[in-house]
Image: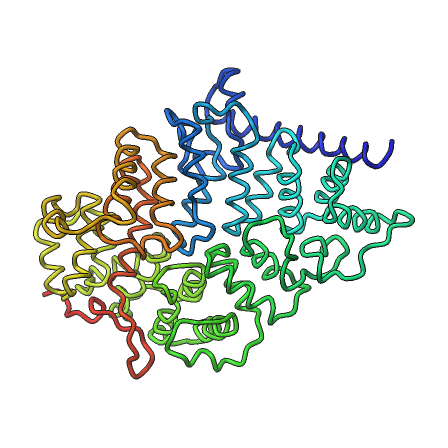
Amino acid sequence: MVPEMISLSAVQFRRIAAAFVLILTVGCQGPAGLDDRNREWIGTLPGRDTDFDRRTWQDTSANVVRQLMERLPDRIESLSEHRLARNLLISVADAPHGDEGSEEFLALRVDELMRLGNVGDAAALARAARDPPRDEASAQREIEAELLTGNVEMACIDLRALAARSSTRWVEDGLVLCKARAGEPGAMPPPDTDKLGALARIGGAPLPSNPPSGDPIGTRIAYRVAVGNDPKVSTARRLEAAFAAARASALGGEAYATILRSAPVSGQAALSGKPPASGEQAASLFQAIDRSADPRRKLALAERGLLSPDGAIDGVSAAMAEPLRTVKPEPALAALAARFAAYFYAVGDLKAATPWADLAKRSGLDTAVWPYRSLLRPPGSGELAEWEKRARLDPGRRERIVAILSAFGIVPPERFSEATDQASFEPSQNDVEEIDKAAAQRHVGETTLRALAIFGGRGPAGANPQTLHRVLEALDRVNLHDEARVLAFEAITATVLVRTSPPKGEVDASIMSASPRR
């Protein structure tokens, strides 16, 4: 058989295997008829792993889904919002009404994952399709995702298949590189790998600093993730690429911490009291936190990296939490307990936050952590008024906290209405009305897409109190309780934390310095 026929057979084998695995996965979620199987949205994780089940798009039209997916932001800085978007995009579900099984929605989901920087998820979702993409753009996008994840062999299989029907320069360069890699006679790879972008990986070269201008993906975040994870790339380039990816939450805390821990740095950047503004500064700050044996200094250093310059919780924030896990919540550290708990709540780690929050409560020093705890355990009568007295928040920040808590029924609705009846809604009254309607109809997927579109790239930190209240309330109403609360944790942190420049470089916040409970 000629190479092209061999490659096409390999592609079909790959698709059959992927489909078989997918059938087994979906089969665990319950029986489905033939029509359901034909209208099923391919995914890489079932509902037990994403909180989105087969009914995500129930009673929602394909046209609405299409319009909303096209409104999704190209970059999501917020850690919790990024996670919400990722889980929705990779989940297994029945297709919305009006989807006739075309490749359009799979392509839209893969596109968005690539734009957000979730290159591994994009590659896995594309591989899970039963058939190779028919259009050249989707096929090229899948190959790009495979290369950025380091799966060169699979990328070459797809490149050989695509070359049978496409003769673009990108495909031709990739095919020659694949043939040279396989040792085929006469294959002469392009001489300048710096202009090849992800194709450079086929020849074993490190990724160039920047993808070529003809790069098929719409943003550079996915490429930054790949450069940051490429051991063949120089340390300086890896640090800057990984920093950019972490600021976009395309690199999570654990993955980014691994890069920061191994970076050779001078340590001088850790002396700055501001949030890190570069990869080197982030590595220096992280290693200073990691080396410190004093829990107080460890926490104070970590708090410098808790909020981004835009006031968001992102992948950098999560990475700075990793060294804090070595500190145990002991009675001797009761004075720091609320701050430790608040940090872990902010990055969405309830398991790590809970023992610190319990220690703070037992010690009567839980002012800083009370808003977080109240979202998990309904407070008693009078607790809110008592907390407000101790926290001493200014009216604007108090209004935001009231907006957040009232979304979950913790604050009486009339209290929120009194605080906001003269305010205008952003981004538009229509958007807020539509998310209310979707939530009332229990349209889980539509509600989530509308929430993502309303929050935009900055997440809950950038929303005004009214919008924040309505979006959180809508997500909670469609049973995305955990997701809504983690978004609320981010919003609380951005609300109460005030950056100052105290003498020892610690982060000050009004509720963190409040008096103990009497």
